[in-house]
Amino acid sequence: MDSWLDGLAKLVPGEVIVAFTLATQVPGVANTACAHLVILIVLAALVPLVLWSSAKRAGVAAPFLQYTVRTLAFLLYGSGTDAVLMRSLDQLTWILQVGALVVAALAALILSPPGTQLPPRDGGHRRARSP
Image (cartoon, rainbow, N blue to C red; front, side, top):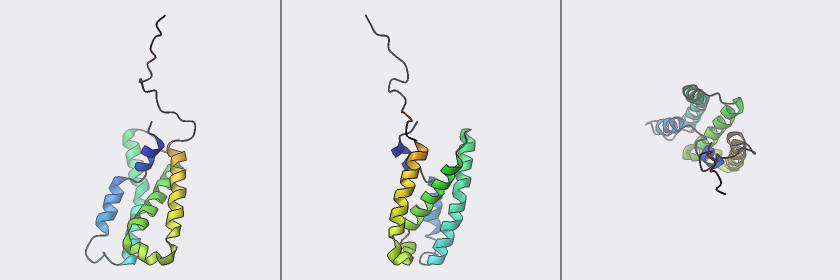
């Protein structure tokens, strides 16, 4: 099982981050806040689909709350890293900072709930004690 730091690093699907970065660099879109907002919303809607597809390939089921937290994390990532959207927020950038803390805390609890333990370092094999 991953540690909570590993889980946080994997919070937002890389495919969605790459698509967002590329889409916001398309000529004619680069300085339009409305276009950036539409791109952010469309790709946020794709986050659960990417996660579902990944879970299906792995043969596991992800809890519904995980889809929600990861979508929120992408929304915070996208709006917080996009200079055009940040300019349009003007004095409200603190919302992203507080949101990032809340999502990170939720993600840590969902991806590695309290009480979960990492597997033993020896792979679970116990060594016999010598007399």
